[in-house]
Structures are given as C-alpha cells and as structure tokens.
Image: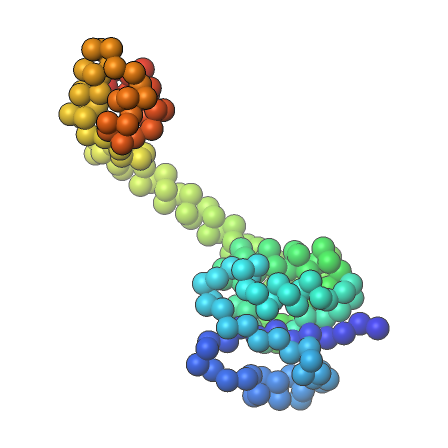
Length: 193
C-alpha cells in the first residue's frame, strides 16, 4: 500500500507547519505525523544536501507520494528542483505541490508546471552563457588579461629563470619560492612569460 509523505523546509525560527498541515488536511490529504518531515536547512542549500529530505527519499518506496506546499522546498534553484523531480520520477514516486496544482510533477508525461520550469532553466543557462561571452569579449577588447592571474610576479619568474640557468634543480627552486615543481617547469618552458 502506498504512503503519503509531507516535506517542509522551514527556517529555524518557525515552528511546526500547523497551518500548512491544516490546509493539506482540508484539501483531502490524510495527515500521518509519522510521515511529516521538517528540514531546517538554508534555502540556498541544494536538495541533496538537506539531510531530512535525503533520508525521507531513501525511505520512500515506489508509488509513494511526496507532498510539498511550495516548490522551493524541493531545491535551491529551478535546476535543483528539476533534478529532485527527476530523482523522484526515476524512483517511481509521485510528487504533488499545492502551489502548482494537483498534477503529479514526477509523472513520465511532464505536466505544464515542469515544462515551464525546464524552460526557465534553459533560459537561465542561455542568459548566463551570453553574459559570460559578452564579458570575455569586452575584457579582450579592453586588453585585460583573461584567466587565472599568475601565482608569481614577473620579477619572481625572472629570478626563477636566473637560478635555473645557474644550475639549480627545479625542486630546489620550487622550495625557495614556495611553489610547485610544475609551476617552475611551466615558467622554464615558457621562458618567464
């Protein structure tokens, strides 16, 4: 027999979700307090790093139902919520969110709410990619260096080359400059650029 679980992720300052449970009860759900799970994780924490949620999902069996009142309880971002819904779909769970209506968000035929969420994730991905390209193009046009800044100054690199030319080993030079052998080898191969 399938079971219904209720999950909430609430701030530490908020008590038990009594009003939400009463609203769910009025909606027709039978509330079994043994299956009400409350996390106190920051909303910025990804779903699979929320201890109570992870434990509950492991405990649930195929055809069980997960009920949340807010989509935000299922993840820290639209992408994270979609990932959680996919995990539930793969496990054969049903997911209902009072905020989005009665549809099973983890069904094989994705409801409109999930399709909309997927479209938002794709829009965010494209926007972030475009912003990154614009920033890199602007930096390149302004002559700013791209990538990670060098770990050693130009003078330090010149001193490394000087010591290597006087016969010091790569390991000795790396110790003196408190850097890795790979960094010294890279400087040697590039000629101090």
